[in-house]
Image (cartoon, rainbow, N blue to C red):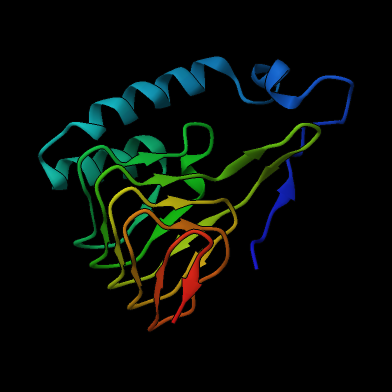
Length: 160
């Protein structure tokens, strides 16, 4: 089950939260993180990419875990992403830690276990926990927790 909590600064109004997003998340922070993420998306050096994510974005990334070409961590709250040891995040994967709905703004930690493979073009929604030794098939939308030692694929997600 996804674990989300309302954003601490958002109060429901007549406007959707995106209309006044920079009152909730400061523009300089988002600009800085966007620049870092865009540089890292195309960076071929995997060690340096992980180092930048750890040091500049505050992500918790285990030893020998790698982010493939064009991976997109959350632009607003990348510090809510944790990846275990020896995991692979596949090409063009998106990892979200915020969720903006018409009248809600929620955030949630994303935890990816150790020895886990995330396929290409996967979308991981906020508040999801993916266990250890998991394989997520290409194109999957991970909308709920995935237990350790399992295989998940499809949209809607199927877990075996």
